Image (cartoon, rainbow, N blue to C red; front, side):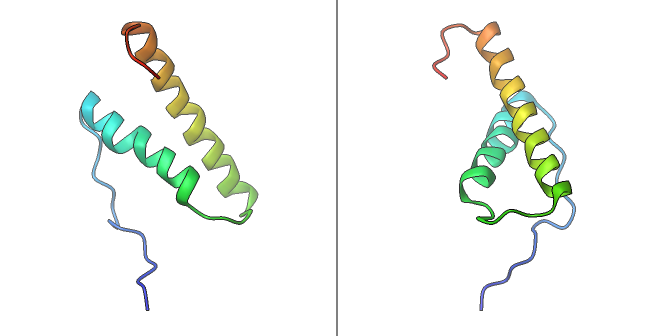
Amino acid sequence: MADLTWKPDVPIPIENVVELFQRGVCQVRNNLFHGEKYIGSREAQSRDEALVSESLWVLRLASEKAPKLKL
């Protein structure tokens, strides 16, 4: 049977802009599209909404700073 535990137990901090995109924004996208397929608690939904909102902020700011980016 598959191991359904979160890994790693303690997330490794994001330390630079490259990691912000590779691990941060991409992880939020992956969780949104491949994560839970049921409606969880209100607390979990609030966290999901905050993560997506903050990821969109990062992408918008990146597109303002580098207008040639294709988002």
